[in-house]
Length: 236
Image (cartoon, rainbow, N blue to C red):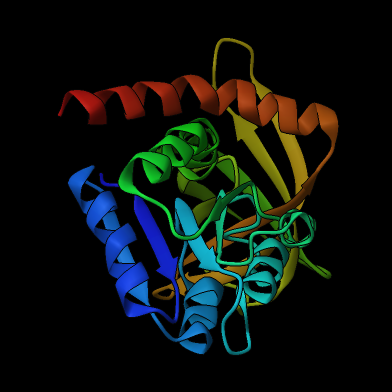
């Protein structure tokens, strides 16, 4: 599966320059010159990395970075900030907003790819966090006084898709108890939020908060499955 990269710059030529470099590296590059449309993308789509121009009509790159950091899906997505403002103040402002890397304009292909290679480690780490693996675990979901049981369809370190006899509305805050497999049967408890429905019996739940021990249990269970799955994709 190709990495998905979002490029937002009001300058069409700059967008196309970054897009061409990403396409040459066999990446799926989504180009957008309207920052307002890009804001909608960030609310509804998950990206593996993003290039944001600082100086744009509102919302500018700094505002988009803050939006990404405040969202569930792109909270940790690596951000490369672009700017023609060659000043330390611009870098400070970008990093305060949540940018991971900074690239001054004008830039050549060599500098762009050096920054991209530096971002690759965080990108792979974030990809593993959202990578879903098919696994069936018993799960109990409680919303207020209403409690239902079901099984997971797939899971990631960020959330899970569950199948149950009924669903809770999107936006519902829920309490989860997931019975993990393995040689030693363990249980992970945590809070989450229903973020999408798939038919009448499936709902996607984003994990909001797990305690340290529960997060460790989930990671210990899922990480070998994720690494195996990612490895199989690489071979394919």
